[in-house]
Image 1 (cartoon, rainbow, N blue to C red):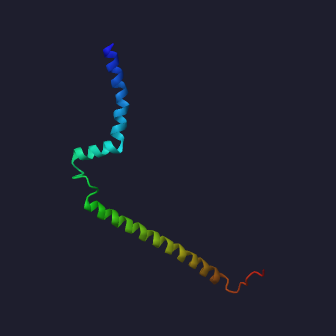
Image 2: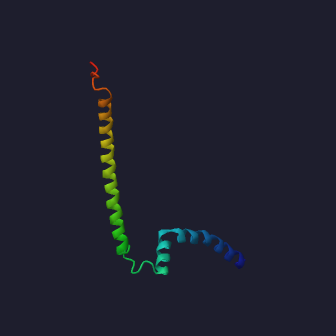
Image 3: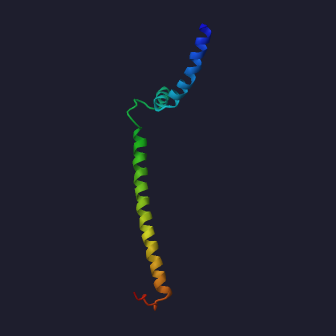
Amino acid sequence: MWVLAVILIVALMIPVAAILVDSPLGRSVARRLEGGAGSGAGPAPELRDLQRKVEALETEIEDLTRSLSGMRDEVQFMQRLLEDPHRKKPNT
């Protein structure tokens, strides 16, 4: 009877252990065991600098994309004007 109870408890603890290991808490414990987190106050200064640089580059790319789409619209407008400069506006 005791053997069956022990087997049942072990069988029920396997999914619980898997969920805990895959959770953020389990990942944190794994990083601390590996020694990669140091004192654990957050990302290393190098990583923070890289994150700041990546964010700055992303905002620059967004600005450039907006500027490029505006220029594309202007070029299309100029091309339409150059294709038929004598075209009259439709009467409304």
